[in-house]
Length: 169
Image (cartoon, rainbow, N blue to C red):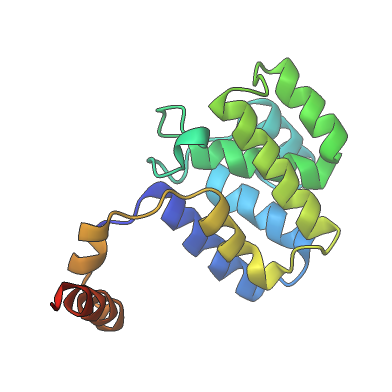
C-alpha cells in the first residue's frame, strides 16, 4: 500500500522532531520541507505567495479534504505562519485569503494554528507531534491495506488472529 500525503506528512514530522527539539525550529523546518517556505525574510514572501507543493496527494480526513492535492502545503504553511506571526494574525490572514471557518480549508487552517500554538506553548511535546497529526488529520487506512502491508507482520498477525478468534463458533 502506498502511503498517502497525510501519512508522508506524519513521517516527515517524526523525522524532523528527532532532529529539531525546539518547537519553533520544528515548525520552520516543516514549512521548508513540506511547503517550500524558506527561512528568514524571504520566508514571508514565500508565505504570501502560498508556498509550493512539496508533498502532493490526498489522505486527510473528510472534514479537512477539499479534493485538492495540496492540503499538506496548506497545513504546513499555516503552521509556519503561526510560528512567525502568531495565531491571531495567522487566523485573520487565513480569513482574508478566503478560508471560511466552515470549509475544509478553514478547518485545516484552524487545525494548523492549534497544532503550532500547542507546540509553541509546550502543551504538545515535539516528540508527540507526529502522533497528533496522525490522529487529528489523517483518515484511517482501509482494513484491506493493513492486511496487505508488507513489512508489518505483527500488525497483520494481530488482525488475522482477532478475525480468527471472532469467527470461531
